[in-house]
Image (tube, rainbow, N blue to C red; front, side, top):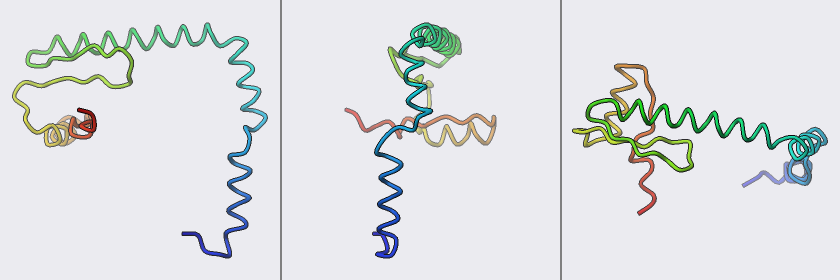
Length: 110
């Protein structure tokens, strides 16, 4: 709920922030369309190499099984003997300073 005295100003803010892309964003879009394909190809290859490296290193650790994702920013893996992924992630932060997203946060699908 917005206070009545802010309604007009909020309307202007929304209009000017969402009605069109600023000029610099439009110019970036033109540059991306004209010369972006090589940049995208290089980026995809870097991402592919990083993904393959990470999954390979995870699978080299005894007790860990990682699936090779086809397209995501996540590498999902199973740690043998871990029943509570949230507690495991909390322990990793405490003991190793490593932050991971617990599996429980991804249980929205089947």
